[in-house]
Length: 236
Image 1 (cartoon, rainbow, N blue to C red):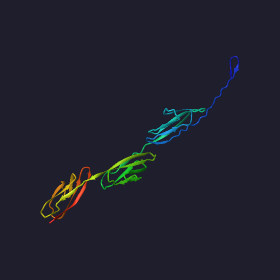
Image 2: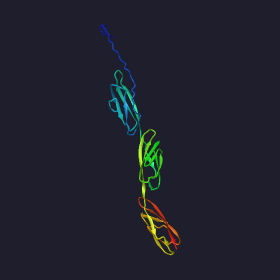
Image 3: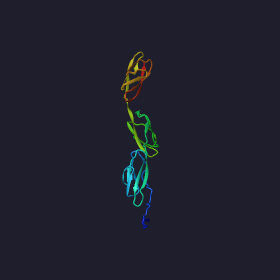
Image 4: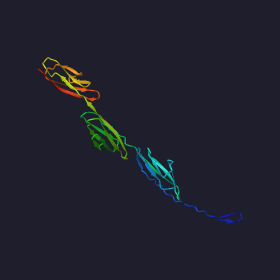
């Protein structure tokens, strides 16, 4: 009601509308692993403005750290609503594989994986859910391990077990001699030699006084050592 200087009055009214306020609930996957994405969805409204600058009802995010996203929604007959949603980033497990990855034919080796809570090996004829496996491959073989951590994130690694070639070698020489005689025994194959008498050449000259067995360990770069023995010399 307004009165002027002459005492005249007039009146007018205005209605203040209190719009409804409503919490904004965003839906989406709260936990993701490396490389994964999740879609965040806001409630229905007229317009949207996300903290990422996007203006759609939904956004797809793939954070590499735990991140909180917010959205402001304009809705008919209601106040603007603001909501937030935190996406937790969980790193993939870091896999460490230990064990001897070079063996000789006929040998076995243990492979041990760490970094998670569950494990699954595959490769060759191996299918195992244990963290440690024993393998005895006959040829070079690659084994794969899938590791899952507490957050459900997975990672895959592999290890190749190399089976070294075996040296082909033989000992030759006369195995019957008379007392006082000498004879030469030789080994074929390989690059390096160690005889039971300490000699390191491919051939040795011997003059045993009684029946004797000589043996030699043969080695070659990149191959497994091979022992050769039981050359008998009968002395008459």
